[in-house]
Length: 196
Image 1 (spheres, rainbow, N blue to C red):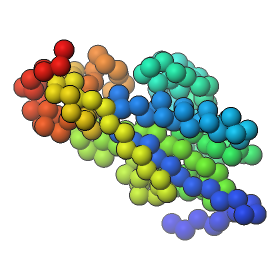
Image 2 (cartoon, rainbow, N blue to C red; image 1 turned 30 degrees about the vertical axis):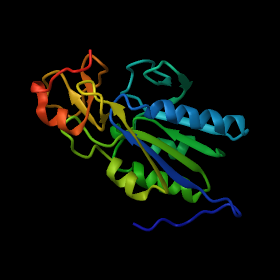
Image 3 (tube, rainbow, N blue to C red; image 1 turned 60 degrees about the horizontal axis):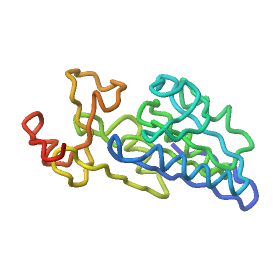
Image 4 (cartoon, rainbow, N blue to C red; image 1 turned 180 degrees about the horizontal axis):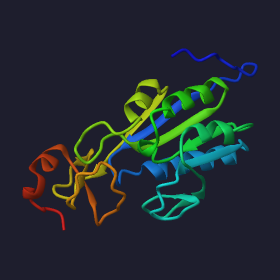
């Protein structure tokens, strides 16, 4: 679908996507970029899905407990209504948003905004998660972060679910998920625990 450009002078926007497994530092990197934008006196707005209440209702919070205030929203169209006169838009946990998120990000970028999106690229089954594949295709810049495999210590790209549930959407932390490399992820419950 073609989107009518709405450029403001020479101001050009773009889309940055930060992706990876759970515990790879996606939210931490998003917070770092947003804080740098604020230091540069840029007007920022941060959004997260309203279903994500793991740490706080109104903040995005990284696993190392860094946080910034955010606006919880129910769908991606709300971002368009709440991001007027902003230079930088941050979006956390993008995998939980609806399929319209990539189009929303396109519109914001065409309006001259820098859009920084963070989310899981794969679900617990190793399949592309929500709107993330389309966001990765549209991104001007992509950062793939890795965790450390809890079984062998190699880089981890997979989020292994430790609890039994077939639902794609299961909010949880270390009690429900752990980062694993490709080999240990494929071994499933049989993976050896070389790391305490």
